[in-house]
Image (cartoon, rainbow, N blue to C red):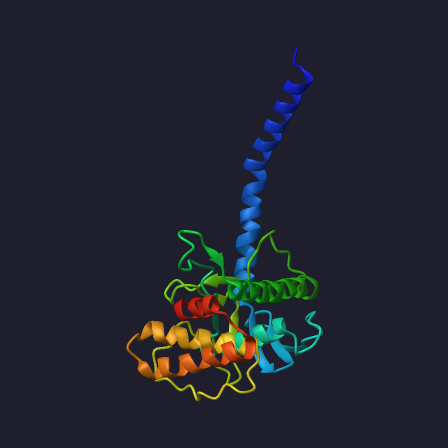
Length: 244
């Protein structure tokens, strides 16, 4: 006769077996279904306080104010992050290097606070979108589902949203830009920290594609200098941005 402990162990093994043979395929099927829905979704820039969402190509586009999407107002850093991505030429974003290895620390690494700040903005924006899509469209997302993914063909640490995007001029998602550089500058006055980081990310991506382009470097350096003077970025923060 089995003891209580043996009975419990056998029961747990049975539950595990049921989960592996029944629940997993269903969960995988649900994940694939929601992935396809997200890929058909289109989110477009309308203005600095609202976006346009089209559930699928055969559905009508509907404008939504930032507050309808769960953001406090259009001045929050999280909302500005979303708008910056939608209005970016490549509709992409970049996380700075996560760790530094400062001289004198040996092999000990130091966390880059700019990486944490950028990741939190992205994570918070995605959470609000997931909640909105769940309530407005009735979509159910698996635990840990991400609305963004790394661009395999792009520079290191470059990401884009899984849904389709359109910017202010109606341009749709573009993964990599190889055309002429059209950045105006280097006048960074009036840039808040989020927009400045986004601009640095854009310049870094162009420098990665064309390392010998001194025109980009001449714009990147004053941009970072402005961030140091205005937002107090440390030497380690600066190194992370230059290597990002």
